[in-house]
Image (cartoon, rainbow, N blue to C red; front, top):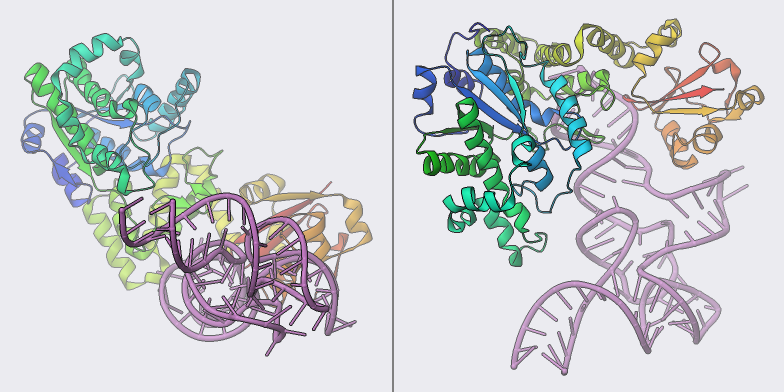
Length: 439
RNA sequence: GGGGGGAUUCCGGAGCGGUCAAACGGGGCAGACUGUAAAUCUGUUGGCAUAGCCUUCGGAGGUUCGAAUCCUCCUCCCCCCA
């Protein structure tokens, strides 16, 4: 891959706000040569979520700068569980799940990184299970454990926190397994240093302790010099957790998070965060982003930053079709969505637009006879928990049936209301939709 | 081992025999305003129903015409002194 970046990697991540801590000498060695660097990814699920994207983007910029990116699937470490930032011991993964997750994750990574053979500095994917599983316990504690003192290991913040559990009732102590985590991760670094001449490990700032265990191991065992670079943990301006909605994580897998929801997540970014995210999650250059920011400040209601952000991410992760469908869905759901517009949708588009919306089915017979809105939404279906809730919503003018406000509690719902003789579109407030399908 | 305090509706927290479905704050939901933002304002926030009824105040009993409120036992939390 040719160099895409006008500036070097460090300057690039600096202006993008992706640099938290960096080990002295890192900048120099990156300038001298193209080197290899890796980030670790826990294969705890068969999909990445957007919380992983910072690390992935680090690798992407790294590759664009002409260096060699390595993505490490933490098959072995995933079986242990990183104590950093966790107050509880983690569930362990079995081997079959692990391989499945690895495959799925690689597919997703290839949307960001160039793994192709003809790429000069192609990305590679490794799984630390492949070398750790062959390591016998005895060999490990003799050849690796020998070089690092417990004193060194317990000085790490992540370990310290868990050891002081007596003044924190939530903490549950630290098992030996978890305690060993940093050593295993440290050995990964050593392994990659030997096998792939990997001189740099990157990750979130919570990984600093684990990464430096690796550089320390390399120094002691191989008299080698390896480097570390971390990026700040992503925050939201309102203090909330990044990447989560009330429904949970935002996944890259369209089965887990529909492209529409994915698109909407980025569209809903606050002004305060949009510029920051644009820098971190897209490869737009400095000039482009500055122009966008300027445009945005002149006409903030257009929300050009959010639109660009959503566009770039959705295109990259889900492709053109999904992106366009997401826009179409957004226009119907938030724009001047009318009954007529919805009526015109063919079944396929309808399903795409309302793809992530909860569905309920009822017998058509019920509508033929007519039913009150209360029985329909709280009795025959569980769109709402209780009839009182429906009553309240109607009173507050917050309920729409087929894109039209439903204001008369006495009105019966019948076949007449069905769109395309098949379904009803229920909307609560502005954003929350449900679909009732007759059968 | 001794002494004391507490458990209330999603959370925090009032209520201390009837006027309690339970103050107030937070959160949630909706409306107005807007940019699918933020802030603000308004309404609403146990269930069923037009008045009214039913189920809720850690659990089980009891006193009373009437109990979240009083008594007994149980469970769980917290504090102080050893």
